Image (cartoon, rainbow, N blue to C red):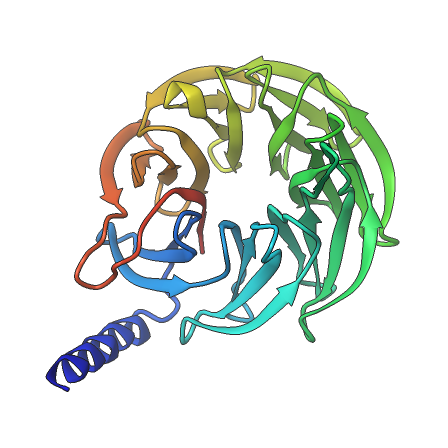
Length: 331
């Protein structure tokens, strides 16, 4: 009984801390190894909350106006999106989508979400090639849109969604006005992470097998260049205010820094083991990198590209869960 009382008091104290910081930014890390999301206070570089979600969470997006966090659970047996209320950090809905989802993008103006139905292997072949269309008010899937094989990551720019199709080496361009694919751009190898520069009308796509980033002109929807970055390029984050793009190279344990004015690598930063997820906060001049293998987050000052902190996602007295971080986001 005494233990239960102590745990209850600890939970109440944790929640009161969160209420006091309502509206402040948080860093969210999807821990694929143990089905949780770590919530980090960037002012202290400390984990302040751990939220249980679905199986093998891969990516996170947020609707800050609605106080909602959408966590994509990629395990084939789960294949869902957990909807988290960020005022209480409780799951308010769970949306069943296509098999093996890896990412989601929100069109909040239209009240629609799109989840990538990434991987469903049958007889050695991936048969998935759709996005699940979600009504954000009802949290229901209302339809499917066919894109390329194995849609992996996607971002929205000027009412178009750019989708990396890892199974057929293409990038689909979806017009959200009529939900039709208006272009399919062939790339040289497996495309994974996608990021956009709104002002320059550029789309950056991490090409995993070639260790490069493909640049797409979002006006013409044509390839506009290729940038060598290193082995196993994974995810990308763009800071349009500084005209920088940051690419994780998983096999090299580094982040490549691209000048988006010239589309050339100007710096490489050594981080933790197997960096995957990457997120930038232009307002605080911080870059956050999820290191999959050593279960940590590297914090980088984007004014000088220097490491200013490392957050271990190891068990603490507040949380007994940790493991294999994948996606990361700042909201």
